[in-house]
Length: 127
Image (cartoon, rainbow, N blue to C red; front, top):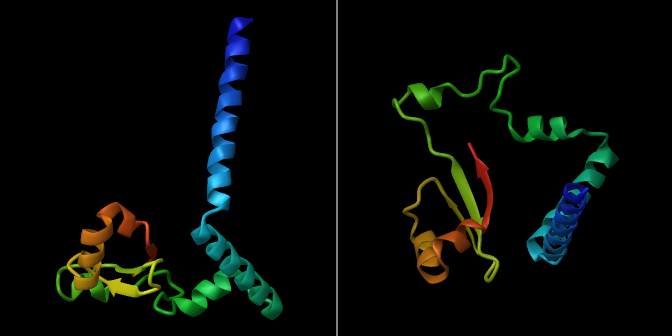
């Protein structure tokens, strides 16, 4: 009987923690911006009768219908091309696109704000 009560109390505490985390996320401006983008994109897809797969195909024409992605990047130089990382500084709105960690602006941001903070500014990664 006590293990049931203990389990209940543990679940209740977990629920409180999750509610606090959810509340914190709901007040995050980055999440609000992403949700707004997602909603506008969904409305646009609905307006034109397109699915997410249609949009992905439209934006990523480099993949062929046989399922082979660009082989040339791995075979031409013997080394795979690094992924493009796009960062956006929420303080200034400045955007940095880089394929390596040695980018001047990115390094100055990391010196000023810390590597973990700057990594949280990662908007997306592209092939």
